[in-house]
Amino acid sequence: MPAYMPTVRGRRLIQELRRAREEAGYTQAQVAEEMGWSESKQIKLEGGDQPVKVADVRAMLSLYGVTGGMAETLIQLAKDARQKGWWHSYGDAIPSWFEVFVALENEAIDLRTYESELVPGLLQTPDYYRAFLRAALQDGGDEQEVERKIEIRRQRQTRLEAVDAPNYWAIINEAVIRRFGDADLAKAQLQVLLDRSELPSVTLQVLPFSVGLHAAQDRAPFVILGFPESADLDVVYVESQHGSLYLERQEEVARYNDVFNHLRALAFDPVKSRAMIAQAIREV
Image 1: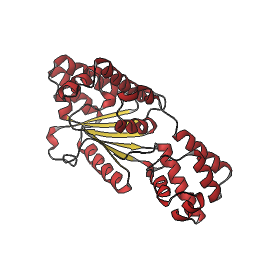
Image 2: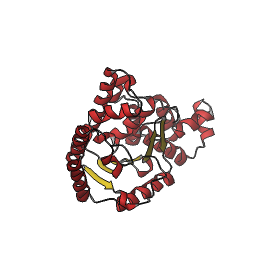
Image 3: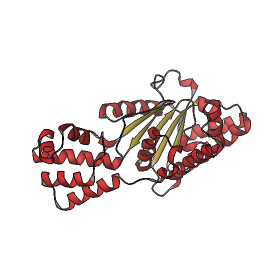
Image 4: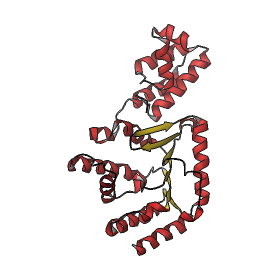
């Protein structure tokens, strides 16, 4: 992951600043000369590789001749992009590579995820998460640290029940509802999947083993995050035990959307998926 990645507001700000520069007829080198900084700084600012200061935004807008309401909107975006979210109060309980995802997730209006082995984080119970940490040889720190991580998950999960809840569409491999080991843990977690699947904001599908080979078998689990301002801001998030990858190019996002739609067509519909989960509870 890059050392810095802007929030959704920051990415929209960068997009608008780049557009304003091009409309004003300036090259990046010319802007750098006018601003009194290096061309490499200008490239980094427009590439989202370093934060944009409010004072720098004001100076660039003045150079580009952007005034009035548009200037006020972009300056406010610059201020908002630097504000800290609720997750910052948890400090080191959120790794820096995951903090970016939490920020993006908090602003997304559309979340589409595929999981091959693990219950998605927004649908996990605390006991399931604790058991996963043990099974994955990740102790998660001391007991207090683990509880802080669980509280972060709870905070993230509240969005699914909020008035402005994102559209959350989860496709899970059948292995997710079969691989538990502990009967009580399985029943509790499967019941939560059923309960959450009834939320207006949630669509849950199970991809059964019977479909055979499919388009995501050579891919890690992923999340596609969609945002209201522009489809150009959509991001694909791919996570591993060692970090994360953010894909932003339109062709990359389009490819993952194609894969997701392929899985959606193969998976059981939501009604049949709930029936399958209910049957799995009875079989535990």
